[in-house]
Length: 598
Image 1 (cartoon, rainbow, N blue to C red):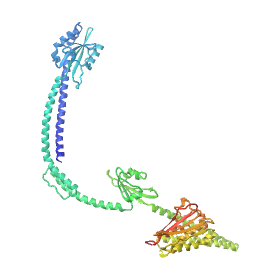
Image 2 (cartoon, rainbow, N blue to C red; image 1 turned 90 degrees about the horizontal axis):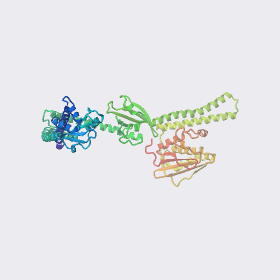
Image 3 (cartoon, one colour; image 1 turned 180 degrees about the vertical axis):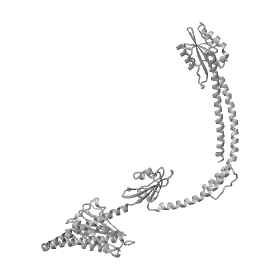
């Protein structure tokens, strides 16, 4: 803590002093260089630009003489003071105007730049063009020299007066300035270090106390109060911190209580809840939602990944509370009803999605509609037949032969019996659904029940030319159950095998047991059940071959009743694997009977 705060204060002051001195140094250095450059070109301009005294004209006249370079040199020596020629840092050179070669001057040719400068090239171009007004008097402040090139043409001769300053004077002066600036910088840095310690002594103490208090609050200790030792801003901050700690303690307690209640609610509620923030990233997903979606929902999951195809995120976010959107989505074989709503009107809000599994409601509604339609259809057919034959007998008024009348009456009785069977089966299912069909439990031999039902179906099998075979195992245990109800199930399964197997078929009944269960299988080589119908054969009124079922007197409710009875015994009845044509149905029951019979 000491190093961090002290270093920051010291670095700030050091950077401030250093930056200030750097700016001042750069300004002074640039100003000195600019001053010398401006002075240089002002001197050149004063001598060569204004020809009020005829100096330039005289130079041109001397240039026309045979030894023009010597005459020009004589005149330049006369104006050396005005041009600032000191023969050390600033010299003049007389060059051939055509080739730029050295002719004469105040210094040797070796003092000339190795490469011709831009000003020299300008002067040579002026000579080539015959324009004596084109003077090379431009210089870059970053260059390490100052120069000027003045073309002088007279008669057939052309010369260039080249004045060069190597900036040693400027460099020496800048060096002195730099030394002064560095000395001032060192003194300023020493002062800044001293001030940083003085400032930190008056500021760090209270801040360290506040930091220690904040650490205790962060650790959960809200009871410690910081002493208020001053009335300045830090003292006010300390008092405010104490108040904040008290409010924070009360708020956290309330928030924790609410969070525990919400966590418990989300964890155990049957509806799924998924929350997303304003950027559509996952915030929360309870276990019920994970189960309903049939997938894991890791952190970083977005709204579009789960519900983007159902309802757009931005449209949901734009809803005004208490408005919400409803939608449905299919997940596998499940139907989910979604309620989508924003949980805040602010930019920090998001979207809450509540999932409700309505699969069973939809299935029950479909079953109800199908059940009503099937009952209407099943009852309408025999009623139509009864009415038709009854009206025929009434309208004939004794003109129909007795044999025909008896045949019509037999049909009416048959159709009436068929309706009676339908009504009885419906009443049985109604009692089973309502839980009013109580099981009469007793302990009885499972093998005896199978043999009894087999004997009951032997005559019907013989009439169809079937071979009905039951080979009892060495022993089958006694089981607990409602014998009459279970025999009804066996009768239905074996009876279906007899009905739906073409004449001359084979029906085989097998049975066995394990430590906890008994089982029976009925296998036939009849018409079989297509793959598309295998999942629905236990539905009410569902028949694979409707025409054949009605011919044999089937109502389409037998297997539904059988399944209800078996389930109430906590057993199972289902299609078993079968090779070749035909069907195998397996019945499994617990030996000890249902644990909680209704």
